[in-house]
Length: 331
Ligand code: NAI
Image (cartoon, rainbow, N blue to C red):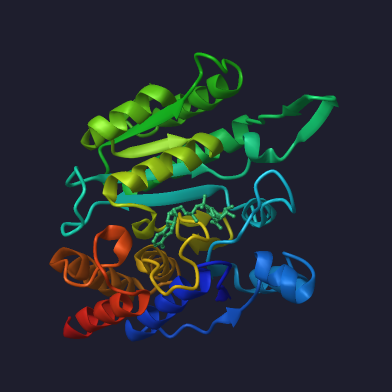
């Protein structure tokens, strides 16, 4: 498996995930690779050839966050990797944990985000001084396959409803195409209640009535924004794992970024990276190890004794990781 520790808090939380995966008894051979700002410093490029070769060989990676400067510098390496390996489906299961004090209980949302097009196609140009265009690309092919992925997930996991979130009242062509594709796919899944909601109203309802949603299906940009909103409902970015799936491989990574404000301090919450590791274990055929990681993580959060600062405790990354390993050993 390819291992990309990443930038900022990446090496801290990925280090924690590796320890927990080892303690769960999964025998994984890691091929450690650099990407992003750390690779730029060491190798003069944010995407070294060795990284791409490794991903072509392993098809699976556990990845830390990578720094992308706003409004300058190289283009997002995350977007580059997702597009290069056609990892079209971004899945972010967002669960609340008893023990983490937030206004809502029992949040259980599955965010499915299209990962390869939309405004992230990177087509931007200056039309005239002071005037720029960013092109939003939506295709029927990508819209149908992400809708199919979301409905298949919903069926396999016995989820009750799926809401396609859009702004087709304004972007009648692009978002209009996206929801028409979702509607067509929905017909093959009569047991799953299909709904549509405009993105602004959906955001409001997510923070007032999160329990009224189940699986969410979104284009790339709305998915990026709404998944962070959903993370806020359960206690923050430190808790939410993620995966980018394609037909031939997958990259597993937390929803959060490099957290430059806390990087290097040993206080980052490792849970999102650890749960991303559990998603990876499921994918590569170690479901028992994955389940024991989830159970132990849930137990530590529930007990509320060893929590990192972002979720109201005082523990360091290392202390929380050790607590999860102890919980796993206790079974
Ligand atoms: P961020 O997710 O890094 O941080 C937002 C806030 O959440 C900060 O206050 C941070 O301390 C907190 N936070 C994030 N992860 C945490 C954790 N594990 N434990 C405790 N607190 C945590 O988002 P921001 O600041 O917008 O982005 C920083 C950098 O990360 C940028 O260069 C951005 O491009 C990059 N980024 C990379 C991603 C990836 O590689 N998948 C995803 C999102 C952002």
